[in-house]
Structure formats: C-alpha cells, structure tokens
Amino acid sequence: MNFIVALFVGVFLTFIGTVILTALGRAFQLWRVLPERTVLVYTLFGKVIGQVEEPGLLFPLVKFGPRALLMPFFGKVYSVSTAIYQSYLRNQLVNSEEGAPMGVGVWFEMYITDPKAYLFQNSDPLGSLKANVATAVVKQLSNLKLDVLLEDRDALSQKVREEVSPTSTQWGFHLGSTYIRKVAFRDRGMIAEIQRKVVNRLRQVTAAMKQAGENEVAIIHSEADKKASQRLGQAQAVRPEIVGRALAEIQREPQVAEALFTLLDIQATLKSPGKIVLSSPGAAGLMLSS
Image 1 (cartoon, rainbow, N blue to C red):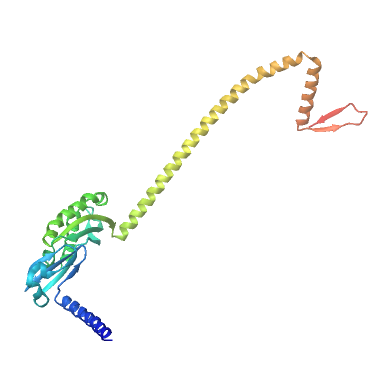
Image 2 (spheres, rainbow, N blue to C red; image 1 turned 180 degrees about the vertical axis):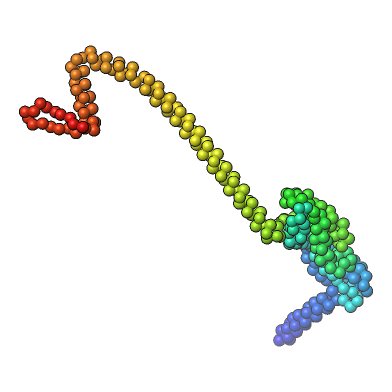
C-alpha cells in the first residue's frame, strides 16, 4: 500500500515538476525551435547581440552565455522570415510618346538577405520597396513609343530591376525576378477607336482573302473551260471522219445500210416537233403536219 501511494505521489510530482520546468523554460527562453527560412535577431538593452539562422532546436544560454537570462526582461527577439515574397502592382500610370495614357502592371519577387537592415534601417521596408518599384516603372517607361511599351517588356523589366536593386539592398532586401506583365490602355475612347480599327482591318483582310480565293477558283474554272473547249473542238473536227468511215463500212452491206437509214428516219420523225396524222387503211400512208 505504501508503495502504491509513493508511486502515485512520485508520478504526480513528476508531472507537476515537468509543467513548472516547461513554464520556466518558456519564460526565460531557455530553448526555442527555429523553423526553416526563419532568422531570429536577439537584442539586449536596445543593441543587437546576434542572430541565429540554422533551423532546429536552439539553446540561447549556450549561444549567448549568461546574457540570455536577461533577454526576457531587458531584451527582445525578432523573428524574420526569409521566404520569397511576391507582389504585383497594378495600373501604374505612364504616358507614351504619342500621349496615350497607359496602365502598367509589374510583378516582382524579393527575399530578405540582411535581417538587421530589414528591422532597423526602415520602419516600413516593404512599403518603401513597393513605392520604389512603382517610381522606377514610371521613370523608365514614361515617354516611350507605344510599340516599345507593348513589345520590349523584357528589356524594360531589366531596367526597372536595375533601378531598384541598390536601394533594396540597403534595406536588407534582394530583388529577384521583375517582369512587366501587363500594358493596357486607360482611355476608353482610345480603346473603342483601336477596337474599331482592328475590326475594320480584320474585315479588309477577310475580304481580301475571300477575293483571292474567288480569283483562284475563277482561274481554275477558266482553265478547265479552256481545256474542255479544246477537247470538244478536237472531237468536232474528228467526228465527220469517224462518221464517214462508219458509213463506208455500212455501205458494203446494202441490207444493213437500208435498215439503218430506215431506223434513223424513224428516230428523226419521232424527234420532230410536228404532229403525226394516221390516215385510214385506204389512205396513202403516214402524213406529217407541222
């Protein structure tokens, strides 16, 4: 019985002791778990005493010595994410050389390379970086020809990145890929006029293609008619000779010739538009009347 009571008390005290030690450890920050792509910046009495970049289990007492015990009371720990951050700025207003108001959309990505500069060089580094990108877009793209704005996006994106990179480095950022994704017209009247011109141009191209096709078909038809007429002319030229030969062969047999001519006479009579009048049995025979 005493053993069970002792065991129960021991388990209870162990549980209570674990909870108390865990609470004290968290209060004095005796250990911390650092995730990936995260940097911890430690400050004591307003001064940076170090930073930790390696992910895993961290013991500040081992890293910074006895000073780590004073951090919960006189210091502060800043957690800075170094993951890639992407942003998109819409409708940055620029004017082309022709005076057309254009809206430019620019996409860019960045990540923090110097957590100390990011925390203490600028009170709003992200907002300042976006403002610098917008300013660089207006500076580099204003008063350019319209075809350059619409076609040379890669070169213009590189210019914007080169314009912003030095300042972003001072604030602890590294500006990565930058790309002008959209260049659009802002004037509705101009958009309607461009649409009208495009539609008219499409109609002209469609009509030209249709006319070209009809011309090709007409040429093919004319060539076919030409060849057909040539063949018919040749056939008409050869026909009398062929018919003459056939009749000469038939004339060698008088009975066949007589039967053939009688048959042809009957066929011609049947094809005639005149009327056939049949007489009485005593009449002279078959009479035709027109």
